[in-house]
Amino acid sequence: MTSFLAARPLNPIYSALPTTIFEVMSQLARTHEAVNLGQGFPDDPGPLDVRQKAADAVVNGWNQYPPMMGLPELRQAAAAHFQRWQGLSLDPETEVMVTSGATEALAGALLALIEPGDEVVLFQPLYDAYLPLVQRAGGIARLVRLEPPHWTITEEKLAAAFSDRTKLVLLNNPQNPTGVVHSREELQRVADFCQRFGAYAVCDEVWEHVIFDGRVFESMMALPGMRERTVKISSAGKIFGMTGWKVGLVLAAPPLMKVLSKAHQFLTFTTPPNLQAAVAYGLGKEDAYFTTMRAGLQRSRDRLADGLAGLGFRVLPSAGTYFLNIDLSAHSNTPDDESFCLDLVKTHGVATIPVSAFYADDAVRSVVRFCFAKTDATIDRALERLARVRLAA
Ligand code: PMP
Ligand code: GLN
Image: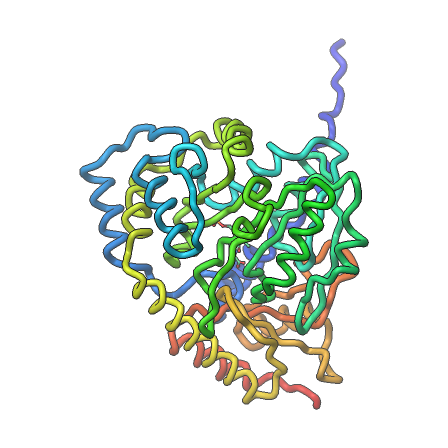
């Protein structure tokens, strides 16, 4: 008689993971017909000329494999774009790679750089993809806990996290979910630790164009001594406000890029050529396109912030991204962020994101994230519903 063994356990990292909070809240928003200020995506369909370029490239252009490193026109456009906006000098041939979104770029960078047992410094609250990717690559996470209202990266926190086993630091700036743009001093602090411990900096800079109040974005790559040890990651989805467009950019010095490209070649190998062609066109758009986009989002931020403050919520500052947060700790009758968000979507019909979902341990449980990249009508509808929430002083 044949004997059967029960199938072996699946990978424990993925088996233990809950469904991402963005999917959970968007599903609840659909079920409860809520205004969705949870998952970060704009109401606006994105620039028409860039979409038309993509449509034209689908109908009349090349629909077979593009080159593994990306269309030459996109790599050239990316180098020119980051020279113009961030003063970076990049060789399109050896220092620019196109990926299928920043998500693939992150996965590839972590797989290519981490050896099992390496330590990786991460900042909490952290974008939810980071930790499982680091762990699956065999990395040991060293978590730095940042706290509201300023979420500052201090010397003491870095000193407690870095060691002679630190392989890399993974930094998101501007930061999702806090809306913080880290100061030059904080970036310099991180850079100093990288140099002192021989570590790389993998910098998720996907929100680089979404910054407000006249800020100028500074890439980690531009800091003294960081050019050769930084992997810069960008996303067309965020640059053009079309989050379904999974076109990412990786920028790194040639010795790093050589290895990063080996991970890319066996993750996705390429990215749809028509979207690449449209992004190449878009990156060359006049400065006014980008400054107008910022101004529009800044107006939406202020509309939501003023509305929430008017309803008695404590609004935390937002310097960039599509997000602003409220801190519930000021109110004596509020439950934790997760219960608040569940009640809000089910009872009042507004979907948001509990920021505790971005912590792996010792979570801050009083902060709730709102996406303001919405029309005035959407924001106003959410505020009308939020007016029914009862808060104690
Ligand atoms: N990193 C951060 C911090 C993000 O907020 C996002 C998307 N919201 C990504 C990465 C993923 O970018 P993409 O859609 O280009 O994969
Ligand atoms: N980055 C988006 C956000 O923060 C969501 C991305 C996703 O749904 N995976 O809302």
